[in-house]
Amino acid sequence: MNRVALKMLMGDRAKYIGIVFGITFASLLITQQMSIFVGIMARTFGSIADLSQPDVWVMDPKVMMIDDIKPLQSTQLYRVRGIEGVEWAVPLYRGLLKARLSNGSFQTCTVTGLDDTTLLGGPPEMLEGRLEDLRLTDSVIVDIAGATGRLAKPAATPEGRPTPLKLGDTLEINDKRATVVGICRVQRTFQSQPVVYTTYSRAMSFAPRERKLLSFILVGLEPGARAPEVCERIQERTGLQAVTRDDFIWMTMNYFLKYTGIPINFGTAVLLGFFVGIAIAGMTFFNFTQDNLKQFGALKAMGTTNGTLLRMILLQSSMVGAIGYGMGVGAASLFGYLTRNSELAFRMPWQVLAISACAVLFICVVSALFSIRKVIKLEPAIVFKS
Amino acid sequence: MTTATQFAVTCHGVTKTYGTGPDRVPALRGIDLEVAAGELLMLVGPSGCGKTTLISVIAGILDHDEGEVRVFGEDLKAAKQNARTRFRGRNVGFVFQAFNLLPALTALENVAVPLLILGEPRKRALERAQATLEKVGLAERSGSLPAQLSGGQQQRVAIARALVHEPRLIVCDEPTSSLDHETGHKVMQVMRSVALSQERALVVVTHDARIFEFADRIARMDDGRIQKVVSSPAEL
Image (cartoon, rainbow over all chains, first blue to last red; front, side, top):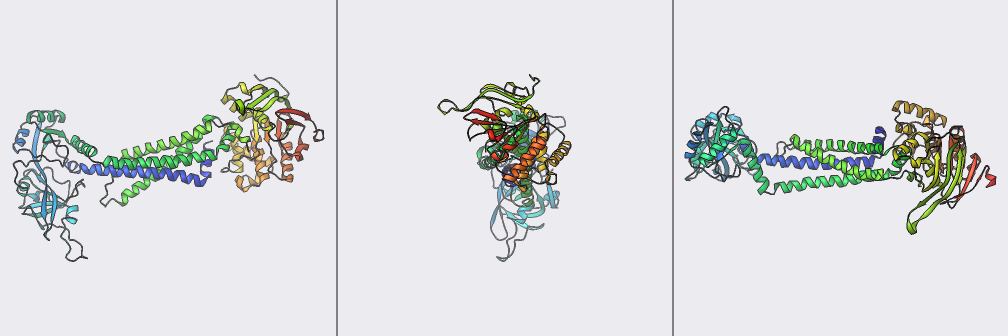
């Protein structure tokens, strides 16, 4: 009877397409909006994810996320280095500084100062130049998005195109000369400013004079040391906040989830997709069943049990669900692929696909339930009514 | 529960009322009727006299209130719903006024449906369906959808569907009402020649006096009762 059920479903082409379209639209909207949400959330912790070497991040106890910088005294670095389980600890400067472009305009940059000796915490991918070139005088490394975008040299004519920064070009950061020695690629972050890497000591010279300038202490653990225990020891002995890399990622994400309207905005769109899916798919599927009630009645009269009818409806519902889900996810993937080089944040991990599948499954089950109830309660004597 | 009987259907004191309270509408008011195996019985009477209710009760798709109905000795009201549904699947064939063919299935597939319901493998079901379509003279249209068939052809497909699983009782509701005189006659000829056998009974509800000649007996109903049962149309 499975084939009969599918033929019944696909026989009414208009309704069949309507149901599949409804589920496709819902699946597309849910998957695409969730993928953008995940993409944006991933940008919030891009700067942390880029730094794979440190096991533990140490910071002021009041820090809530990566861009919430509350500088530490530089002596804290030595205190952390003396704690059992810590193999190495290096300073990291992170701050927003103004760079003066060749046309005289200013652009705020996220400046990251790396430990002068080890250069730990550098960019994940160098496109031009070498990380070690940071040891040259006045040297900085600029991310590709900044080099080709906001830090690019303005066009000479209004119709012209800006010239990207290249190796050897100079900038002024806080009135200090900076020479580009490398171009890197970093994960896009929630902040849209260009990212500039330099050494910690040079970053100190770029930054305005303040009593405390150390943003974070990056810690590597001794082999065999357990991160939670070391974090606890650091907190006990220094009064600072010490968290693992993963915990810091979650801290940052939670901050944005809690203090910004992002989840509500995207949640609304996802919910909209969900309800649109239920409305379109559910109503069309229900109408399809309603239109076929006499046929279901005839099948019932001819000896089809309620169990078989139930399976037939579930099969019909699963079929449109599977096709609609596949088309929706496919369309969302295509959207992601086409926008891969744009500013749009789009990330589609398997969890998004799983949640989307569950949502579509729910839509199909709800749609089927309305229909099943109608068919189960159907009196087969309906077949004799003209 | 099954008893040896020469009757396909026996009804004694059968009543059925629709609705409750002031909206009560008595449809059957004590029906006594017997249909022998090998017999084609026609139920005739004015609209609303209870004909369709009676064949619904006989076919086991509607519960009566009082009295006793046995189909080949089986008291369907006493059976559980699934058992009754399975009994219908095995023993009852239906021919509906509006044909009720599944529009998305070909004539062959429509005819095979009762066999598929009984769990017959698809290939075998289609073979048997093809053989039955041949019996009703529609073998060459087996691949056509119902919408591509004329009314008479659709009714013959419906008859083939009612016959394919070799049920012992066939109930027909106004099988010729949507057909012209000539086609109606052809359909009834098919019914008599192919459907009727010593082991099988046919109960046909009809308004169509032109087909009374095909009946072995005619039961005239009015106001929920059997008024008279005659052997020829002239006695009505």
